Amino acid sequence: MSEADGRLNDGRPAEPSWDDIFRPSGELRRPVTPASPEPVSAEHPNARLSDSFAVAAAEARATQAPPVAAQPQSRREAREAAAHPAQRGWEPPKRKRRLGWLWALLVVFVLIIGGGVTGWVLFEPQIRYVLGWEAPNDYTTTGNGTKVTVVIQSGDIGSNVAKTLEQDGVTKTFDAFYKLLLKNPSVTFQPGSYQLQKQMSASSALAALQDPKKKVIHVAVIKEGVSAASAFVQLASATGLPVADFHTAAKNYVALGVPAEAPSIEGFLFPATYTFDPGVTAMQVLQQLVSKMITHLDKAGVAPADRMRVVTLASIVQRESGPSVSDMHKIARVFQNRLDQGMRLQSDATVAYGTGHVERVTTTAAERADASNKYNTYANDGLPVGPIGLPGADAIDSALHPTDGPWLFFVAVNLKTGETVFSTTIAEHDAAVKQWQAWCRASAENMAYCA
Image (tube, rainbow, N blue to C red; front, side, top):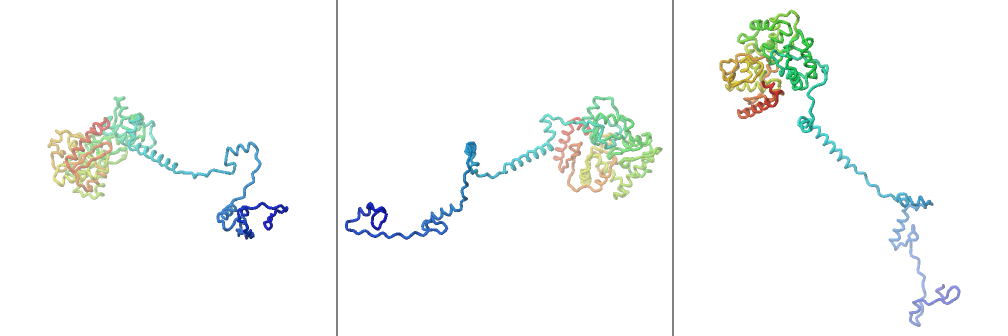
């Protein structure tokens, strides 16, 4: 249509517009001026600059990747695409893998294992008792190849031998060997040194002690703390000489180098392992042991005038300390403190020695009250009249260098391990004594140590 003349292109008159219908009559129709074209974006011709939203939309469309033409699909492919959206080009957002739960699980696992191991180490006997798991008390072999010399002292009974075998690492427990002896009450033991091995079964250890071939000839192992009389038995067994020969030779102890003020040779035979040539005499043997003690005292800086005092105090420390070397210097301090303060030593070991019971340290009230016993440090002041056993190097060192401390009392509350309680008051000491008495009554094994 041509708006200039109001007719259509084919010549027919055009229909009036609404403006023509409602225009007042006589009003001239204003010529229509064609509108100038609105400016558009140079980069996006279809977007007018005046329409910011249109421009932004055009820019967004331009940044999008061109659509991929859909490939023809079979019916099966169409069904699978409908069931799995990822196959239609869409994938759900991937979640980051979180490993925190795994680390937490590992930490809990480590704590459980660590706690279990710690609990087993600290409370193995209690755990076995609750669960009913009885630990084996005996080895099953004839030894692990490590040789050990076992010494049976004169007068040792079955419980003493069972204790010695356990302490030397031959048998696993006291009970394993002791219960075997109860089944064989006719078994006896000959004093001497025997070549055994560590980690032997109780039956194999017993068989070895009954085998004369296992007895070591010409070698004597003199242990710390034993009496001179016990040492004579070991020396006689090693040399083949009669025990009486050593008692006779010991009567001339001053000629061997023992101080003249000493009542006997007791204390001056240095405990060690000795090897003797065939044909040696008892006097020659004793001279070897005494000379070794004098040499050791000289090296330790003990003046000849102090030999008697040092050896006597060291022998008491040796007997009272038992297997615990670490407590010797504290025990020596207790005795030295009591001597310095004018207190009596009150050592049961000295009383027992004076009664002739050199194999024990326990005493009775009557024995402790007997002032005629010159070794009775309950009834008499100061050191006893002489040594009460053979002190070793550690005991001698403790007598010379006691640890500093205020202690006046001590008692071993576990004679098997040597655990000792030191006290400064009588009340503390009495409580520790009750602890020791309870330990002794706890088992037959414990009583073997307390007897």
